[in-house]
Length: 170
Ligand SMILES: [Zn+2]
Image 1 (cartoon, protein in one colour):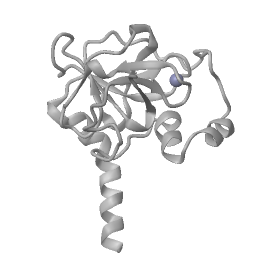
Image 2 (cartoon, helix red, strand yellow):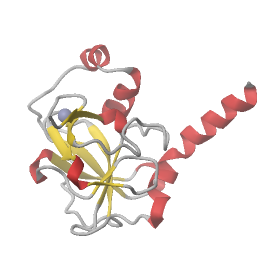
Image 3 (cartoon, rainbow, N blue to C red):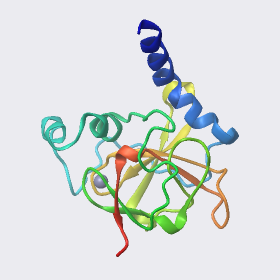
């Protein structure tokens, strides 16, 4: 039991590293916006409000910039047709047409639904320089973007399942 717990802790600690090392990921060439902590969002809530509305995992990913463990999210290896919305505010973010199998354990897209629905910010946490993907409507953390994706963009938006909510096509 103790061994099992150590294993979980280790994989939790390592997940940001696996996340970026997967497929020899390099930081993408997407133009990153300047870090702006004073940025205003259309949807702004207190931590207490977010905590009440989101599950523990959603809160950790979206509001605390967490990363779910690889190969555990509901939308990894999931290819139902539909639109993916922000799990925090409901803004449309990605379409299943741009989703591809990256094999790295997180849902991956080569483009957002609309460029202005996601914001890119330089993230220097864990001693790495990565480009963080944020929802422009509520400022929630979604994942990171790397430049090892397929054509036509060459980008891989590596997004946490917990940050998304799929509405299937009719
Ligand atoms: Zn949002």
